[in-house]
Image 1 (cartoon, one colour):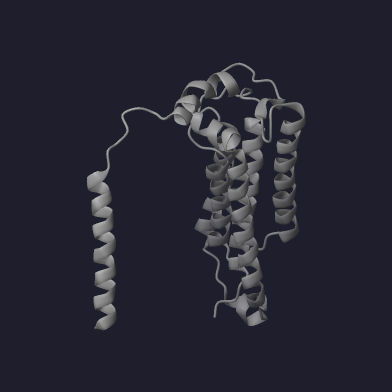
Image 2 (cartoon, helix red, strand yellow):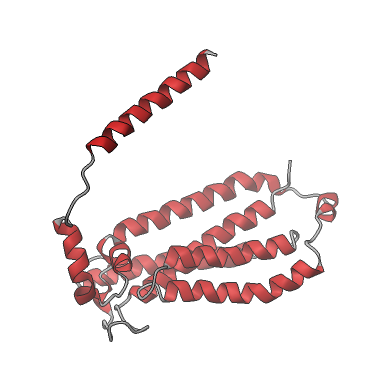
Length: 233
C-alpha cells in the first residue's frame, strides 16, 4: 500500500512539473541562427535534397558515429550475454520446428525484395526520407523473416562480423579523408557534388549512408542470430 502511494505521489509530482512546463511553453515563431543556416545552406553547401540527411551525416556526423558505436556495443553485449546459452543438445535441435512449407516459400520470395528495399532506402537517403538506420533495419528484417520460416537456420558470424567491422572502419576512414581533402571530419565534399536531385549527387553522402546501412543491418542481424542460437530456458 505504501509503495503504491509513493508511486502515485511520484507520478503526480512529475505530472505537475510537466504541466507547468507546458503552460509556460511558448513555441518559437522563427528558426534560431543554427537552424536557419541548416535550412538555407544545406542544399548549396552539400547538394542534398533531404536536409535531415545533411544534418545527420555531415553537420553532426561525429554524433552519428557515436550512435553507430552505441549500437555496435549493444550488439556486442547481447552476443556476450547469450553466448553461454548456445550449448545445444541434439534433442533441443530436433525440438525446433520450422515455420512450414508455405512460410518457407514465402520467405524465399520476399527476402530478396526486402533486401532490395533496404538498399534502396539507404542509397536514396539524400533524396528522399530514409537513410542508413532505416535501411539497415529493413535489411535485418529479412534475417528475421528467414529465422521465422526456419528457426534452425544458422548464419555465418564470421561474415556478419566482417561486414560490420569493415563498414565501420570505412566510415571512420572517410571521415579522416574529409579532414585531409575537404573542410573537416566527415566533410562529404571529398567527392563532386554532382547534379542536384540526382542519385549521384551530394558528394560522399550516398556512400556514407550505404556504409551506415550495411553496418546497422549487420549489427541487428548479429543480435537476431545470437538470439536464435540461444537455448530457451
